Amino acid sequence: MKKLLTASLLAALSFSTFGRLAWPADDPCVRPVSSQQGLIRGKADPENQVCAWKGIPYAATPVGDLRFRATQPPNPHPGVLDAYEFGPACPQEPSLLAGGEIQSCNEDCLTLNIWSPQKPGRYPVMVWIHGGGFINGSGSIDLYHGAVLSGQKDVVVVTLNYRLGALGFLSLPELVQEDPNGSAGNYGILDQIQALKWVQQNIAAFQGDPGNVTIFGQSAGGGSVTMLLISPLTQGLFQHAIPMSGAMNVIGKKEKGYERGRELVKQLGCEGKDLLPCLREKPADAFPPRSALGKIPSFSGMAAGFSPKVDGYVITCQPIECLEQGSYNRVPVMLGYTRDEMKFFTIAAPYFKYLPRFMVNKLIRKMNGEAAEEARALYSYSDYKRSSDLFLAMITDYFTGPGFADAEALSQHTPVYFYRFEWDHSKYGAFHGLDIPFVFGNRDIHSKIAKKVQAESDRADAVDLAELMMAYYTNFAKTGDPNEPGLLDWPRFTTEKKEIMYFDLPITVAPISEKDLARYEFFAGQSRKSTD
Figure 1 (tube, rainbow, N blue to C red):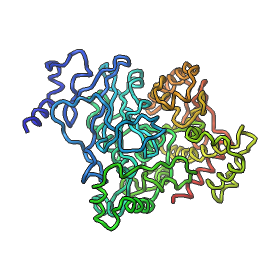
Figure 2: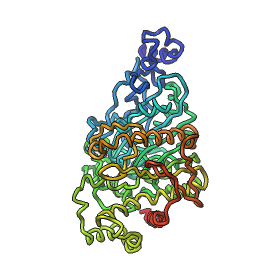
Figure 3: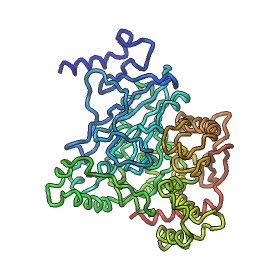
Figure 4: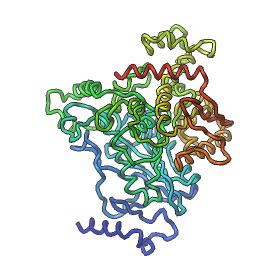
């Protein structure tokens, strides 16, 4: 009790007594910062002129009775928390997407990381949500380090972890029955919401403006941004949103989640037992988040795995329905995709490029079912060097078409800015995730994957584009409008003009081509037909 009282007193007096504490008066990074849980000390990053705090708990550890429950606030900590190192990632399997970087995983993973300019001020906040198909990833992956973006563009950058796979998205009727809100299966999204609440309560101490928060994320992180947009639980937690390569307009229904949950119960040997205690007693590695990579996509594919579901509490309706009804947090939105999204995944299947035409046609039929011929008519083999390139273009459009529908729906109620990333100086074109280091300014990427695909001779070109993209993104974070004098004007996306910003050198703006529009509309329509 004495230690807790001491910590509370230090937290209460921290701002007025910093000058009398033993830490260097001229180094703002090592002076303990006051949070609602206690004092936190970070480190300076002299190269980027930012302060960094890593591995800060934003929630209680979801173990024991807290596993498969709504996220709880963090516990107070005594003394000063030295936030020098990233916390462990949430339990997951090794992933190509993470570049082999995930070294440590355990359930004590609900932490966040902060980068803030060293100079005094009050700065816009950008909260990053990582991708990985809801089965992999971490806020500590080097592609997401926020030092450059924070130091060069005067923003506070936050990255976070959230529960993944079955531990983050298991849904069962028994879990619904014990939950006071009748909800189950969206624990990973509830983690993100709790992180945003922590930001609201504490970010001012790190020089962030809680009234000017932008959420942004890529792939499953982009899908998460969409979920946060439509959730009734996030009102007032953010002011701008950027879903990158992952806007979702259709997700699984809870009944489909129950089916997958029952399969897991059987696999774990909990069938016929006291179910929930049995699940909570299992070790974390008994819940492997199985990857769906390598399977032919289907619009109901999200429902088959562990991912967000319409539960009536966290998510009350299909995203596209919420957006079209205007039932979402009406904040400015910037969204888009890369031109060659799916080429990235051929890294794991190099033989794919040699597929003959008859095999590609078979894949098209499997992917599109009864609409296969209609889909096939939108493409011509004469436009592609290899038969497999046609299929890669098709599954990219399958992936991006629903985002086009989201943009049209959003534009009825709020400002929308649409982009397509086209810088393709890599072995795999403008692939899924290649835009991330440009947004963060991490041009000298340390990721093993990036080193494989980016030619050294193209680094100067990349630096120029990164500077422009960082400007557009942080302008949007500051004002809800990406424009500023001296930059090419980026017009709003509307259903009448459908203009897009194309990120390449030079940057250009043009309406969506008729060919792309036909493909987007086709796949957006297909997604609507397959809500399970």
